[in-house]
Image (cartoon, rainbow, N blue to C red; front, side):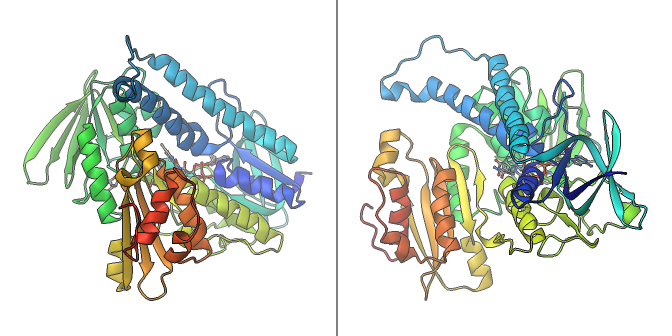
Length: 475
Ligand code: FAD
Ligand code: NAI
């Protein structure tokens, strides 16, 4: 007789492990299956985000920012650093340590919440009574059954045809987080979130970074004014971004990679790099689920097809996170995981796609929520815009980081906030105020009338809200 659970979650990334914890909190007997292995073949729950995504990238972004500041920014504060040296081995080991703490934290949370954890691959098998069971293939093999199954199998880096990842010269995010010596010349294909974040890390550590992007516009999903400002700042930092390129042949030598491409003017180019990161998006991961055997429906792009409630075509089978439509973000996966567990319990799960924040952890950070100005124009929405530069913010001046701005977009008639866009210091933290405001359908005037601590970066948010009605006080 197979082990029985109320809820079995396949995948222990942010979507899966959070769904499992919430299901257990709601009183369901819950299991979570995850196959990720650490260097010692032990369990490493947390998925892409914890192991080769959000967490290690932010650890390296922090370390590399310290290195850059020690080299360039401290002198202005009257701190002279002599004999500055990079110990890349220690930096990478610290990053691995941060990942391990997170893996262990999730195992602890499973224990605390009485979630049964299985280390191995979960796949569908047809059950005796015509339903389906889940086979877990790990160190041992067993079959378990559940009243509800939540699929949270995540995504994988997309390969460029003809240039498979070898993680030595041609790197996905996995290899990009573990380069053991700073490359003199680093090529990056794709000026998206990973390209800019990983490009920033290695540039700060001393690499000459060239980013090749197919689209003619820089950060097309970002508000144009913000993207323009960010582009200016990145160029000043030395990040070279070529837009409108068409990638041709990629060949690897013993210690280098050659990329042939056509640039925006139509001229043929050839560039040789020590390492090449390919970051051109991610594909949903359904490998090994054996969904075909039970008729699990995928959409035309390979995502598990779900409705607005994250229900798949199979009864009592749900799917969340990167493996379903919508932004590939950890917090989106988590919100869907919570919502599904609550729907299983007969409650109303809540995920508002209009208020999911985006952050690019470059320096300065870029963060936004809601509509961009170009989207409002395209939708024919009448709006008012207000901006406030960090240059006019006292705290930013004290920090020594005055780049960027906060931008508010509000409905011309009702003043409801439609979008908030930030490029500047701590944008990732500042955007939360805008998310809360939009979730409560606040107006720009609401933010303008709220007392913000002085001196703080958040005053720039208040001032941008005031600027919507042309009454900012400090600019
Ligand atoms: P995943 O995290 O991919 O987890 C899926 C898990 O399921 C994995 O552990 C996998 O091994 C397991 N699995 C798959 N199939 C099976 C199976 N059949 N049986 C058992 N286990 C299985 N997002 C942010 O919001 N902020 C960031 O700063 C950020 N930074 C990122 C940086 C990088 C370099 C990358 C690559 C991504 C980043 N992301 C970030 C995106 C984020 O990592 C994903 O959106 C998030 O991990 C999706 O969560 P998930 O639970 O859907 O899937
Ligand atoms: P992305 O979608 O952000 O960017 C991919 C870029 O590659 C795009 O600009 C695209 O136009 C370009 N591109 C596609 N094909 C190309 C080609 N053949 N030649 C040249 N350029 C090409 O994808 P990325 O950076 O791989 O990241 C994947 C996802 O991971 C992100 O979309 C995001 O959801 C998530 N992520 C989130 C982070 C965060 O929240 N801070 C950090 C890193 C990743």
